[in-house]
Amino acid sequence: MRIQVDTHTHTYASGHAYSTIIENAFAASKLGLPMFCTTDHASSMPGAPHYWFFNNQRVLPRFIHNVAIVRGCEANICNDGEIDIPLSVDPHLDWVIASFHEPVFPSKDSLVHTQALIKVICSNRVDALGHLGNPNFDFDFEAVIACAAEYNVAIELNNTSLKGETRIGSIDRCYEIAKVAKRLGAYVTTGSDAHFCEDIGKFNKVEQLINDIDFPLDKVITHTPKQFLDFLALRGRAPIEEFKKLMV
Image (cartoon, rainbow, N blue to C red):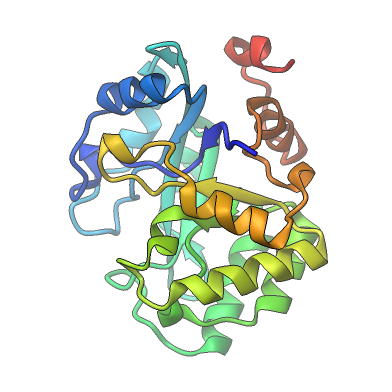
């Protein structure tokens, strides 16, 4: 199988990434990746942009270097399960990931993390949960993934986590999370979590995981652009007129 959509990428605007969106699109084009989501960190992350950055994504072309650009954000999970983008930002985004990050949400215990994740899912403001394999944020896999399946919130399989170079200890947990998602019928998404353009669309570890556990491709929303756009429709997102030609 080949993943055709990257739903987790960063630009220089995140404060600790090193490429522009044009460089990301050019790298995706060279790779033959037809679509990616641009998901810079929301403002609670040190170095991240002000929320106006996300409000103004309407100025981004829908295609750069013939690659479809989905306007998004990686929001931080804060407090007991809120996210750090104002409600006024929501209409300007096509795609929102919610993730735990240590500088914003200090690691606590499994119960606190579980309750926060369930609250985030039930808010209906996010489309996916990011890099859940991080052992610093243990949670009840069954409860959270069952809730995600009920609310059609995707579980991210993060290629960076699976490399074993960051969020150390994530690999085995990612496999277990994916197995639970398979059993409970949850949707999964795939993110490179690229912080440099050359990593856009690189999914060797994620593709290996999907093959290893025989995850059903109809639940991998990034298998094709059409599957991804169908998932956005399932989530209640408005159709993106410029992407109609990808719905085949």
